[in-house]
Structure formats: structure tokens, C-alpha cells
Length: 188
Image 1 (tube, helix red, strand yellow):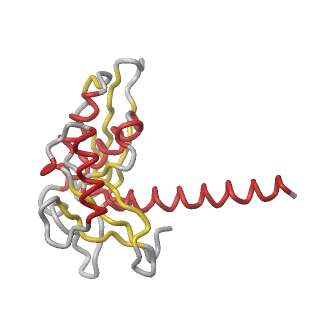
Image 2 (cartoon, one colour):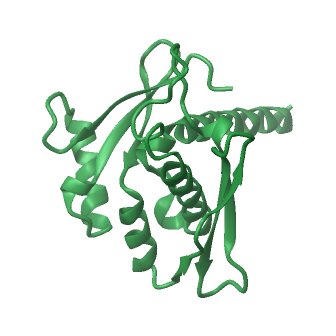
Image 3 (cartoon, rainbow, N blue to C red):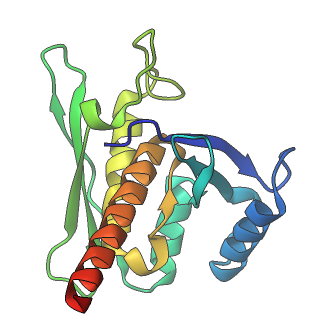
């Protein structure tokens, strides 16, 4: 679905090459959510030609929790539940996030085969090989937090789940195109 799309470099406030537009987005987000600017980074989502299609905010899972807590409606999350493959490695992680205004928490599951990035060598990058349980659980929690608190966490990702940002971008583009078609059909 996201064929040809990619994520550009993840940059922080003091990284070389950060553009004024990226710095502005980062600063606005940090100020609005009262998050130290050094905890916020920005990534560009690139279209198949390499042009920037969108920018997203990148934070840690702890920062996502803090932003959810600031709403006054976050009441924690359950420990992750794992499904294992035949070798004992995590195949899926499910995390349930709780809101004070909902009777049940909101659960989201992250599947290894959908989330762990792959390269030619077959080995996923970053923290994935050394801490697969931790990373998959954080991705599941990020999914659940975005689902439970879309008003403050839409467009906010952890670095290990930037593939989700590409999928979200494509879904928004498909939705806009469908809306445009419906509008044109209604005008006929």
C-alpha cells in the first residue's frame, strides 16, 4: 500500500539540515503540549518521487503518555500481552489504554510482520533485534494512545512506528480523493 513512499531523516531542534518549516512545527508542538523541545523531533514523509508529502511529530512513548495524561482522562495502560511464534519470539503485542470517561479500555495490537521494518539482509534496524518485546509493546501502546486520544496525538508517532505514519498519510489521501469524487458526482 505504501509502495515507493519513505520516511526522511528524523531531525531534532539542533540537528544540522533541519528546515525552518520543520523547526517551526517542532517548536509549535513543544509549546502547545508543554514538552521540552529536545524531546520532540520531526520526520518528513516522502512521496515516490522523494518530495515531502507531509511532516509528522516523533516522540518517545513516555512523552506520548505524558501528553495523554495532560488531558486529565488518561488512567494508565495494562501490561502488554504477547502472542509468540514457534521460536518464542513475539508475533504480536496487545496493549489496552484506559480513559476515565470510558467503561473499558481501548486495545490495539501490533503484529511483528506488519510493524518490524525489513531490509535486504532481513534484519530489522534500530532497537528491534535487541529488544523485540519492548519495541513491539511500545508500538502497540502508541497505536492505542493515538486511538484513545486522537485530539492530542493524531500525527504523533514513535520512531519505531513511522511505517504507520506512511499508512495514515495514504489513507488520508484516499479519503480526500473519495470526497472529491463524491463532490463531483453530486454536482453532475
